[in-house]
Image 1: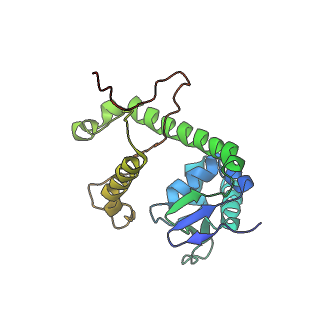
Image 2 (image 1 turned 45 degrees about the vertical axis):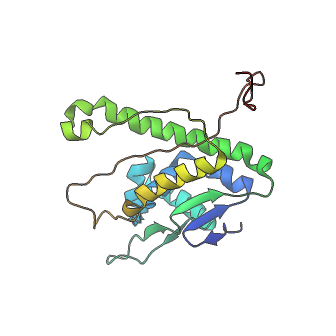
Image 3 (image 1 turned 135 degrees about the vertical axis):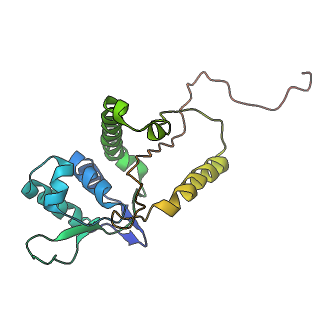
Length: 205
């Protein structure tokens, strides 16, 4: 199985079979746990995947074949190697987008399920949280009329705001910090066929 092409901080997936296989919840959980620059062993990641260390190792080796993660230097005891992400982002790129549509839909479904579970987990115990953190919780969605250029600028602005915090590691983070889930879904809406299209202004109006 060929490894995914690597472009700086990006790992680019082009094969629909690889993209579809990536949709496994355990694999997305592993990628998520390693993405902030963390290094964790299969045993440590087992608590994230909800699987045994051996089953977690199986998924790590699959991700290694695609060039998404790699094994780091063995720790002092030499019994378990830590794993880390190869790049900071994973992207889907295909010359024939239709060939990846079902695979991307599978990943999106797993992505949405995981974010829903994280939100519900928090809300179920929110009453135990300090008020300062409770005040920061935001669950919101909205539609905006944007051109393609405007959408590109808005998406870039969001990425730029979060960029200073993206490289923080567990061992170098501020003492009063905690992991915060910020999920972004940016998709153009599909308008019904009967929806009116904007046209030139009416001179008589």
